[in-house]
Length: 184
Image (cartoon, rainbow, N blue to C red; front, side):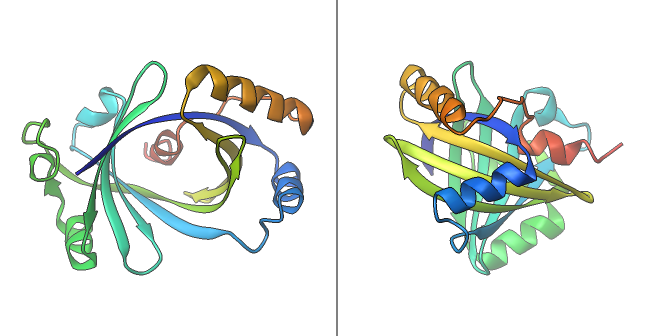
């Protein structure tokens, strides 16, 4: 299992600004697709804890299951890489969280909703800048994320980036929240 603490700053952006930034950073030909498949219990136990369980697919054969819990200054993530056949079986049948995350009690989760993310990334000021176009439930939206190693420094860099590129910070929900919003 791989564990990490993710510090990120994000803002919704317009389609026009998305394309403008892709061009400014020469990222038009560096976009890759990743699909997030979100899981929860039937009574949405993890959603109530602000915890995300997902399988992320990159390309045809790269899969990992992640448990991501929101903290005050970032997210605690635990990842386990999967074989394609195991990931497909989990999507079809569900799985027990304790099989992958030792600190989690036995909660059986099933696939609920997915989101396709078309992402471009580039190193920026000691962190990583991401430009995302997300598609879910007939919706397309755009956002910018900046991932940093230090909260205070990352916040300054992100805020200055927004000023430099004439962007107004527009709050956005987590991708999982946006995808789950389609379920009523």
